[in-house]
Length: 283
Image 1 (tube, one colour):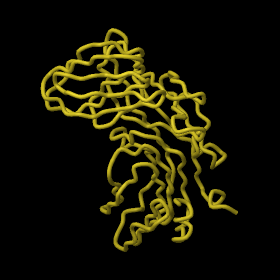
Image 2 (cartoon, rainbow, N blue to C red):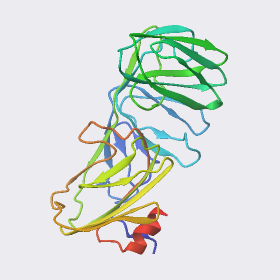
Image 3 (cartoon, rainbow, N blue to C red):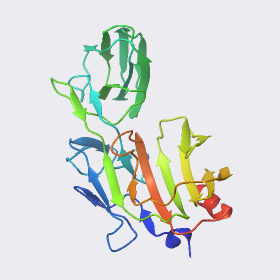
């Protein structure tokens, strides 16, 4: 029997409908996640194309290839107008604020004014640049093929937000389930496109990888072990509040502070996994 068979809750993003994300286990539906997002949003479909998803419909996203992720992103506004096909324009910004511009295509955006620089496309993959503005406007001169442009406030690029003659906002993704996680047990999650430099579990930190982040956590009221990408990075004893875990907010913190990336799988185990088992999940 594999560890996946031993898990009490298994989420592998595949089945979804408006307001619902289906878990593989338990099979009675008690582990299915609710989902909400108050606006339309885009994903990359199985054929590598942008697809608009309806309000409250989870985005099972294929931007990393044939194995899809559940895309969980924060609320963002796109200030680049008529963004499907980029045209030269001036964007009004707040001075001293961090912005990220991204697009797909083989063309170029040259920036002057509140930021000076150039972003060169490489084809179908999105390219991005993050900068802090020095004035209240940025001139964007477009040449060549520049498509699906975002000009958004924040330190990293998110999925394309469609605009026409006005800016547009995509609301944050929120998915949760009422589920009794045991006070002594284990959790595994596989993440893509994680945007921070570190993870924090209780008061302990460890460094994130720029590419792959598979994490398995074994916990009890007195012990904590964490495996990251095949290695135990936290092995501690102490006092940990693990007795009131009755709700799982996946990829967000009570509706805010969204992951800004994808979740490939999420598992809960009703026992403490051994070091070997933890590492076998995350290697």
